Length: 305
Ligand code: FAD
Image (tube, rainbow, N blue to C red; front, top):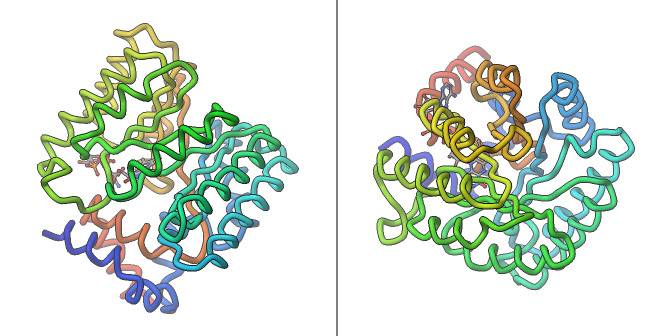
């Protein structure tokens, strides 16, 4: 119930603009967002890298409706990639990109051109790009863009969402040599016709997808905080004789930092998804939907002002 409320709120641009400009914002977002500026995110990236973690930077913003916004999103990625190289933070730090931020809803070709420019800048900086997964309406277009991008930038990765019924098939398609696949549960509200609705069915799908990725030739990126799924991933890696260099775990900034350290201590690669920027509203609402217990944290941030 709360989950659907937060996911519905996540999709409201009008509420988003109001909340993002409210003075309570800073305290609330600090836990999940690295900061608003490039300087701040580079500082946090440096701290994480010094701790032995790897990072995927996400410049917040999605569902761009004007060409100017899409160009600005592209330019921010080009700028941060240039600075990452200069700061010696590559290849430990890569970038995650939402094609809707680069203009996918305006013109798919434009989003492709923008993504291509980001991939070129990442290659120049010595790092990689992963395409985030958004709602199911965009999945085909995103995976088609991935195929195009990988022709010249084969290390470009993509996220797949276990809650979508189609994802086992997508895992089979992408479990080939050189392919980088992030497997997550899925953070968007989706209808029953395309997505599993119960937590158990999503978890079972996650495990089926994990089996395909771990037994295939791709590089699986296991993106979950779920202790049971993490244990199953460790087990499958052993079963399919994968060394720690042949897969990685990924978690969101601010979520289960002790578990991040435990996995790191056990010799795993752990990548932190690190969002930054002013448009944090949709992202934060999806984190509240993931774990409504975080509402207590939000309430304390508001009342302690
Ligand atoms: P959940 O079902 O949220 O949690 C399972 C269990 O994990 C909980 O019962 C609890 O035991 C533990 N847990 C979870 N959170 C906490 C916490 N804060 N403190 C303590 N224990 C906790 N979604 C997309 O749709 N597209 C993407 O491109 C995408 N990229 C992602 C990238 C990364 C690196 C990660 C980690 C997630 C990404 N997601 C993405 C979000 C994802 O789809 C889920 O919404 C989110 O990760 C929550 O699912 P979960 O697997 O952590 O399990």
